[in-house]
Image 1: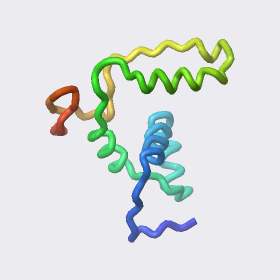
Image 2: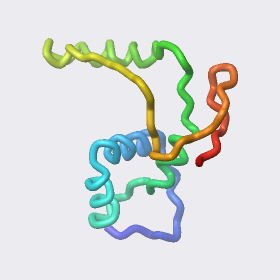
Image 3: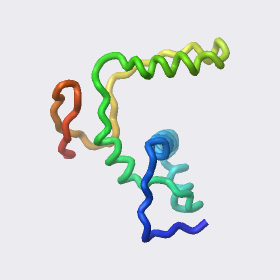
Image 4: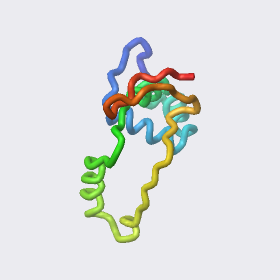
Length: 111
């Protein structure tokens, strides 16, 4: 498969989140599939830009809990035993400066 480098691709949220998941599990596999196998994947800049604008409100994410409840119906007991803990989230090695306004992260400045 050959990619036309002159055309722009409009990536769906599912494409981007899948690429972020792949890259977070194995950056080497992400680079191999994108650069060597020429699999159409969003570039790292697209992933970083999307992550920089993604906002998660503080508090309990009830939508996520509903999704987890639906998914658990098909899991065995051992797979259901999961502990979720979150301390800090790093999208990049760079730190960002921004402001929380009404539960939304405003545009940050990368340092």
